[in-house]
Image (cartoon, rainbow, N blue to C red):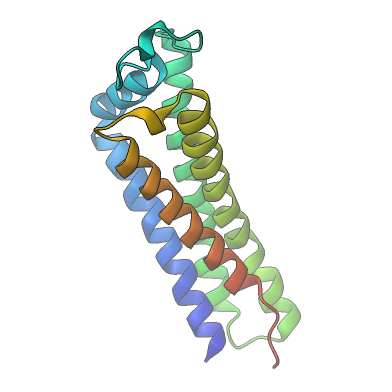
Length: 162
């Protein structure tokens, strides 16, 4: 039964990554404008005058591609993990452990994107925390999603007594 719970957890991780990537893809211009607002630091008074503020299109596009690429990679890897875990849910422990590896890596990719991109870069470097309008909601979402993806990776990776 616990293996099926792990499959379900990985499936929800895959679903989150798929839906998040599709949202970015279907709202590309809007997503690009949010990244631009963060990198130009225009979301709070005096931000555009700070040394790290930039409107360089390469930086802006790199930011969105990092976000989108992380979500796509997590979606693919978590989906593959879900499928492999499902196929191995009745197999010997070694086979199931091997089946879950790619999904756990997908969860890790999502955490890297969410923590590194949103908290490390957007919040700390570009000072998104200063934004009274979207800073709190964006950062709390990144923290929430990153924490859940990390927890799923930990739970799926936990050893079992079979």
